[in-house]
Figure 1 (cartoon, rainbow, N blue to C red):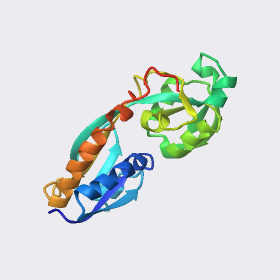
Figure 2: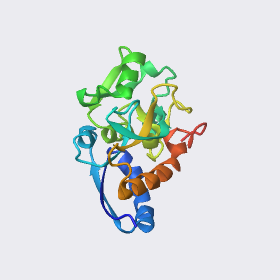
Figure 3: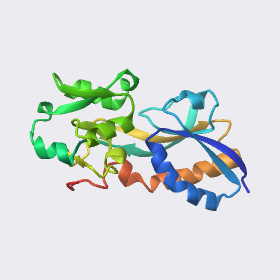
Figure 4: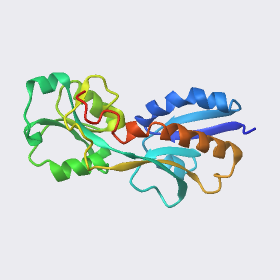
Length: 212
């Protein structure tokens, strides 16, 4: 039976989804001990600081091998309280929560630069949980991955359907020389099925067409 520690790195937002599946993984593979590293930097996998990465990215590093688990859709969100007092149909007329340099290379930042011009930025944040929380506090609208925004109870989609852009993908990655190691292969197989079961959430289909 596969056994030993497996170092898994994922982002601060995907960690929430991952934790839901760890009890089932422990039941299926009781001799595998997952070690979870929450980090938004890909470097911790390429530098061998982790053995498996769960990452949202349009294109993973050529140094890594893995599986594309799902597309990642985004939508525009606002708090119920904010939307109750600001009903403008024109998105550019709203206050928006911006991203600072730490998130400048993300697909969300690219969408904002492309779609929003002369927009009022109420504040800037350096992490997606802070972006979600700022929107929930009523500071303005925010573009969020649907797996983040749809799970926030005080947020509502302003765009009922997921945006055509930005799009990213959820990847399950490892090193080529580790993929046949028993504990790594067993973990990858389990996580691929577990995360695929959340595809509707990742692809923005859980709440599509519904007012939240």
